[in-house]
Image 1 (cartoon, protein in one colour):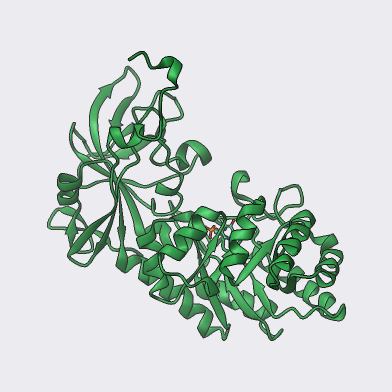
Image 2 (cartoon, rainbow, N blue to C red; image 1 turned 180 degrees about the horizontal axis):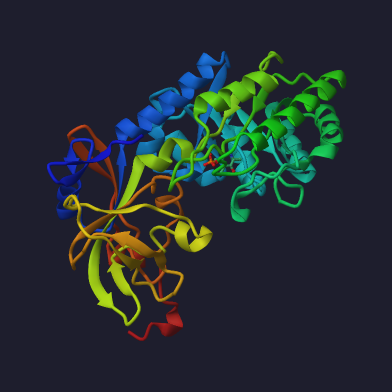
Length: 424
Ligand SMILES: *Cc1c(COP(=O)(O)O)cnc(C)c1O
């Protein structure tokens, strides 16, 4: 469910015509809908509440770290799950209280841990023993005690794309399930850290509940063992990972997900933390691009658009599917033809779709890429010296540019020529 729809023959985001934004901001750009962001958060929060789960929802900022997006959720009561100092700073700047920030990630540096401890965030999710020892030393030296979770790797197959599965023992994430008890015992003995939670995140874009159920049952066993060892587990951080429809997949509804949690973990007297990313932002964003040229090959027609793999990396990185549709509503019964939709970057991988069925399109027509709100702008780069593209947030009949397109001078401003190349 989202708020991008045709109205009077053209695509709107809520009450704003996409063609108008394209005229005023230029293409390509990302466009997000406030009503959709709010709706996704609310549906998720209400599903947890209906299942009787006492939960803090920490938006996984890496899916869309724009401050305006984080703040939209913060105003609804969300916290943030961050994976770097940059995201931690971004969340704080967006108005998320430190008391609602969780810090995840397999390679937090000493400096990042010091920063997080100094800010007194809600919880640090520790992913290895050396990290545990370092965090203990940092917090103890400051006379603080940090509430921590140990991220356990439950060794279940999330059944998702190999590059976004994280819960198998051969993945780099977390502490192997079989060693968790030992590591908790060590954490209990160390100063500066208090193990209060178990964290578990098995992958992204999950479209089945079974892997979640398997992982949660392992977490359940672990709670019992740790409590028997005298460790007071009070919270369970169940990560993110719930999928969204890109094409014809039908991911579980939040209510069904909440029921699985209630059934597997609901009777343990724990509070819950969730770290949804894609679920909250995926369908709340589109990428809008203009057709630069229509190129007829001998066997294929190519629509060359002004967005490229540096703007939306998912198709080239994960062979991901994005819906593609014209901004001008096609006439009913318009003939469809198979085309390849490609960007201008000098890589064959810069292909958004092959043999996609689209109505007739011409130079300068606008196209929208659906479900681009998650891991879209967040993963963009300046490859081919292409400026990062603007992000626009719509609310009702208003829109605002929430990240501007940098000028070429802005892009060059961080570079300089060393003296020996400066021949002036
Ligand atoms: C990426 C990530 C998330 C968010 O995953 P989604 O699939 O976007 O919900 C949550 N927690 C951790 C630890 C992550 O690495």
